[in-house]
Image 1 (cartoon, rainbow, N blue to C red):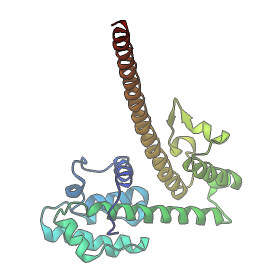
Image 2: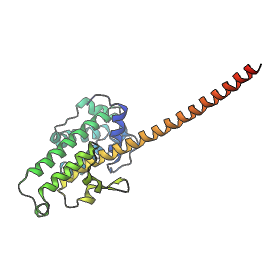
Image 3: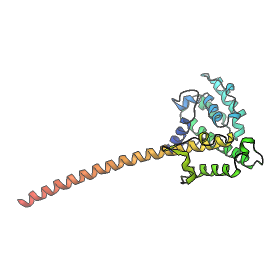
Image 4: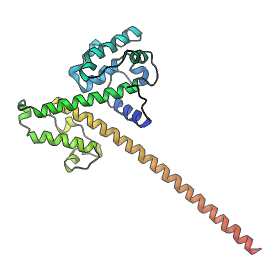
Length: 238
Protein backbone atom coordinates (compact mmCIF):
# COMPACT_ATOMS: atom_id res chain seq x y z
CA UNK A 1 0.00 0.00 0.00
CA UNK A 2 2.93 2.30 0.60
CA UNK A 3 4.54 1.60 -2.76
CA UNK A 4 4.69 4.43 -5.27
CA UNK A 5 2.54 3.95 -8.36
CA UNK A 6 4.09 4.45 -11.77
CA UNK A 7 2.63 6.88 -14.31
CA UNK A 8 0.55 4.25 -16.11
CA UNK A 9 -0.89 2.92 -12.84
CA UNK A 10 -1.79 6.46 -11.76
CA UNK A 11 -3.55 7.24 -15.04
CA UNK A 12 -5.46 3.97 -14.83
CA UNK A 13 -6.49 4.74 -11.24
CA UNK A 14 -7.63 8.27 -12.11
CA UNK A 15 -9.66 6.94 -15.04
CA UNK A 16 -11.30 4.41 -12.70
CA UNK A 17 -12.18 7.12 -10.18
CA UNK A 18 -13.56 9.39 -12.91
CA UNK A 19 -16.07 6.71 -13.90
CA UNK A 20 -17.60 6.64 -10.41
CA UNK A 21 -20.40 9.16 -9.72
CA UNK A 22 -19.43 10.91 -6.49
CA UNK A 23 -21.27 13.53 -4.45
CA UNK A 24 -18.58 16.18 -4.90
CA UNK A 25 -16.72 17.37 -8.00
CA UNK A 26 -13.29 15.77 -8.33
CA UNK A 27 -10.72 18.59 -8.29
CA UNK A 28 -7.65 17.47 -6.35
CA UNK A 29 -7.53 13.83 -5.33
CA UNK A 30 -5.39 14.46 -2.24
CA UNK A 31 -7.91 16.92 -0.77
CA UNK A 32 -11.00 15.23 -2.25
CA UNK A 33 -10.41 12.00 -0.30
CA UNK A 34 -8.89 13.45 2.86
CA UNK A 35 -12.06 13.18 4.97
CA UNK A 36 -12.86 9.61 3.89
CA UNK A 37 -16.35 10.41 2.59
CA UNK A 38 -15.53 9.87 -1.06
CA UNK A 39 -13.68 6.66 -0.20
CA UNK A 40 -16.90 5.46 1.43
CA UNK A 41 -18.82 6.45 -1.70
CA UNK A 42 -16.43 4.44 -3.88
CA UNK A 43 -17.16 1.29 -1.87
CA UNK A 44 -20.88 2.14 -1.80
CA UNK A 45 -20.94 2.31 -5.60
CA UNK A 46 -19.65 -1.24 -6.02
CA UNK A 47 -20.82 -2.84 -2.77
CA UNK A 48 -23.86 -0.86 -1.62
CA UNK A 49 -24.74 -3.15 1.28
CA UNK A 50 -21.39 -2.58 2.99
CA UNK A 51 -21.72 1.17 3.50
CA UNK A 52 -24.17 3.50 5.23
CA UNK A 53 -23.17 6.87 3.86
CA UNK A 54 -25.01 8.85 6.53
CA UNK A 55 -22.34 7.66 8.99
CA UNK A 56 -19.66 9.64 7.16
CA UNK A 57 -19.64 13.42 7.53
CA UNK A 58 -17.90 15.82 5.18
CA UNK A 59 -15.43 17.75 7.29
CA UNK A 60 -12.49 20.10 7.43
CA UNK A 61 -11.55 19.30 11.01
CA UNK A 62 -8.81 16.76 11.55
CA UNK A 63 -10.76 15.01 14.30
CA UNK A 64 -13.82 14.33 12.13
CA UNK A 65 -11.67 13.18 9.23
CA UNK A 66 -9.90 10.70 11.52
CA UNK A 67 -13.26 9.54 12.82
CA UNK A 68 -14.49 8.84 9.29
CA UNK A 69 -11.40 6.84 8.35
CA UNK A 70 -11.42 4.88 11.61
CA UNK A 71 -15.07 4.00 10.99
CA UNK A 72 -14.23 2.88 7.46
CA UNK A 73 -11.48 0.64 8.81
CA UNK A 74 -13.78 -0.95 11.41
CA UNK A 75 -17.08 -1.22 9.54
CA UNK A 76 -16.19 -1.48 5.86
CA UNK A 77 -12.55 -2.24 5.07
CA UNK A 78 -12.47 -5.10 7.58
CA UNK A 79 -15.06 -6.91 5.42
CA UNK A 80 -12.74 -6.54 2.44
CA UNK A 81 -9.68 -7.89 4.27
CA UNK A 82 -8.24 -4.41 4.06
CA UNK A 83 -6.88 -1.96 6.63
CA UNK A 84 -5.33 1.50 6.30
CA UNK A 85 -2.58 1.91 8.93
CA UNK A 86 -2.96 4.71 11.45
CA UNK A 87 0.11 6.61 10.26
CA UNK A 88 -1.19 6.45 6.68
CA UNK A 89 -4.59 7.73 7.78
CA UNK A 90 -2.93 10.69 9.51
CA UNK A 91 -1.00 11.55 6.36
CA UNK A 92 -4.18 11.33 4.26
CA UNK A 93 -6.02 13.59 6.70
CA UNK A 94 -3.17 16.12 6.52
CA UNK A 95 -3.44 16.19 2.68
CA UNK A 96 0.01 14.67 2.18
CA UNK A 97 0.61 14.34 -1.55
CA UNK A 98 1.05 10.86 -3.03
CA UNK A 99 -0.45 8.97 -0.06
CA UNK A 100 -4.07 8.44 -1.11
CA UNK A 101 -3.30 6.95 -4.55
CA UNK A 102 -1.71 3.69 -3.32
CA UNK A 103 -4.54 3.34 -0.78
CA UNK A 104 -7.20 3.70 -3.47
CA UNK A 105 -5.32 1.34 -5.76
CA UNK A 106 -5.27 -1.35 -3.07
CA UNK A 107 -8.92 -0.65 -2.25
CA UNK A 108 -9.76 -1.14 -5.90
CA UNK A 109 -8.07 -4.54 -5.87
CA UNK A 110 -9.96 -5.56 -2.73
CA UNK A 111 -13.28 -4.47 -4.24
CA UNK A 112 -12.58 -6.51 -7.38
CA UNK A 113 -11.78 -9.57 -5.27
CA UNK A 114 -14.99 -9.15 -3.25
CA UNK A 115 -17.12 -8.73 -6.37
CA UNK A 116 -15.59 -11.79 -7.96
CA UNK A 117 -16.17 -13.86 -4.83
CA UNK A 118 -19.77 -12.68 -4.67
CA UNK A 119 -20.34 -13.52 -8.32
CA UNK A 120 -18.82 -16.97 -7.88
CA UNK A 121 -21.04 -17.63 -4.86
CA UNK A 122 -24.09 -16.73 -6.90
CA UNK A 123 -23.07 -19.04 -9.71
CA UNK A 124 -22.66 -21.91 -7.22
CA UNK A 125 -26.14 -21.54 -5.73
CA UNK A 126 -28.58 -24.30 -6.62
CA UNK A 127 -31.63 -22.09 -6.44
CA UNK A 128 -32.23 -18.62 -7.81
CA UNK A 129 -35.06 -16.18 -7.38
CA UNK A 130 -37.92 -16.25 -9.88
CA UNK A 131 -36.20 -13.86 -12.28
CA UNK A 132 -32.92 -15.75 -12.24
CA UNK A 133 -34.64 -19.08 -12.80
CA UNK A 134 -35.89 -17.83 -16.14
CA UNK A 135 -32.28 -17.42 -17.24
CA UNK A 136 -30.28 -20.58 -18.04
CA UNK A 137 -27.28 -21.25 -15.81
CA UNK A 138 -25.03 -21.41 -18.86
CA UNK A 139 -26.04 -17.89 -19.91
CA UNK A 140 -24.66 -16.46 -16.67
CA UNK A 141 -21.44 -18.40 -17.24
CA UNK A 142 -21.25 -17.05 -20.78
CA UNK A 143 -21.78 -13.50 -19.52
CA UNK A 144 -18.83 -13.80 -17.14
CA UNK A 145 -16.75 -15.42 -19.91
CA UNK A 146 -17.49 -12.49 -22.24
CA UNK A 147 -16.35 -10.02 -19.58
CA UNK A 148 -13.12 -11.92 -18.91
CA UNK A 149 -12.44 -12.27 -22.63
CA UNK A 150 -12.98 -8.55 -23.21
CA UNK A 151 -10.64 -7.69 -20.37
CA UNK A 152 -7.99 -9.92 -21.91
CA UNK A 153 -8.39 -8.10 -25.19
CA UNK A 154 -9.84 -11.11 -27.01
CA UNK A 155 -12.43 -10.84 -29.78
CA UNK A 156 -15.53 -12.94 -29.18
CA UNK A 157 -18.54 -12.98 -31.44
CA UNK A 158 -21.00 -12.83 -28.53
CA UNK A 159 -19.21 -9.81 -27.06
CA UNK A 160 -19.87 -7.75 -30.17
CA UNK A 161 -23.47 -7.28 -29.12
CA UNK A 162 -22.29 -5.10 -26.24
CA UNK A 163 -20.63 -2.63 -28.60
CA UNK A 164 -22.84 -0.01 -30.19
CA UNK A 165 -21.49 2.80 -32.36
CA UNK A 166 -18.00 2.00 -31.13
CA UNK A 167 -18.97 2.43 -27.47
CA UNK A 168 -19.35 -0.18 -24.76
CA UNK A 169 -22.92 -0.57 -23.55
CA UNK A 170 -23.55 -1.02 -19.85
CA UNK A 171 -24.39 -4.43 -18.41
CA UNK A 172 -27.63 -3.00 -17.01
CA UNK A 173 -28.78 -2.22 -20.54
CA UNK A 174 -27.92 -5.66 -21.93
CA UNK A 175 -28.92 -7.78 -18.94
CA UNK A 176 -31.54 -5.86 -16.92
CA UNK A 177 -32.55 -8.97 -14.92
CA UNK A 178 -29.05 -9.99 -13.85
CA UNK A 179 -28.36 -10.61 -10.17
CA UNK A 180 -27.10 -7.31 -8.62
CA UNK A 181 -23.77 -8.64 -7.27
CA UNK A 182 -22.87 -10.22 -10.61
CA UNK A 183 -23.93 -7.06 -12.41
CA UNK A 184 -21.69 -4.99 -10.15
CA UNK A 185 -18.79 -7.34 -10.84
CA UNK A 186 -19.28 -7.04 -14.58
CA UNK A 187 -19.71 -3.27 -14.35
CA UNK A 188 -16.35 -3.08 -12.62
CA UNK A 189 -14.80 -5.03 -15.48
CA UNK A 190 -16.54 -2.79 -18.00
CA UNK A 191 -14.99 0.25 -16.35
CA UNK A 192 -11.58 -1.40 -16.61
CA UNK A 193 -12.24 -2.05 -20.30
CA UNK A 194 -13.25 1.58 -20.90
CA UNK A 195 -10.10 2.76 -19.10
CA UNK A 196 -8.03 0.52 -21.36
CA UNK A 197 -9.86 1.84 -24.41
CA UNK A 198 -9.02 5.40 -23.37
CA UNK A 199 -5.38 4.39 -22.94
CA UNK A 200 -5.39 2.87 -26.43
CA UNK A 201 -6.84 6.08 -27.88
CA UNK A 202 -4.14 8.14 -26.18
CA UNK A 203 -1.43 5.84 -27.50
CA UNK A 204 -2.93 6.03 -30.99
CA UNK A 205 -2.78 9.82 -30.83
CA UNK A 206 0.87 9.63 -29.77
CA UNK A 207 1.63 7.28 -32.65
CA UNK A 208 -0.03 9.67 -35.10
CA UNK A 209 2.01 12.52 -33.67
CA UNK A 210 5.23 10.54 -34.03
CA UNK A 211 4.32 9.58 -37.59
CA UNK A 212 3.78 13.25 -38.38
CA UNK A 213 7.18 14.14 -36.90
CA UNK A 214 8.85 11.38 -38.91
CA UNK A 215 7.17 12.71 -42.05
CA UNK A 216 8.47 16.22 -41.32
CA UNK A 217 11.98 14.88 -40.76
CA UNK A 218 11.81 12.94 -44.03
CA UNK A 219 10.84 16.11 -45.83
CA UNK A 220 13.72 17.96 -44.18
CA UNK A 221 16.16 15.23 -45.19
CA UNK A 222 14.91 15.34 -48.79
CA UNK A 223 15.34 19.12 -48.79
CA UNK A 224 18.90 18.86 -47.48
CA UNK A 225 19.76 16.16 -50.02
CA UNK A 226 18.40 18.34 -52.80
CA UNK A 227 20.48 21.31 -51.65
CA UNK A 228 23.52 19.08 -51.38
CA UNK A 229 23.05 17.85 -54.95
CA UNK A 230 22.71 21.44 -56.17
CA UNK A 231 25.88 22.39 -54.29
CA UNK A 232 27.76 19.44 -55.79
CA UNK A 233 26.52 20.32 -59.27
CA UNK A 234 27.80 23.88 -58.92
CA UNK A 235 31.13 22.58 -57.67
CA UNK A 236 31.51 20.27 -60.65
CA UNK A 237 30.56 23.08 -63.03
CA UNK A 238 33.57 25.09 -61.80
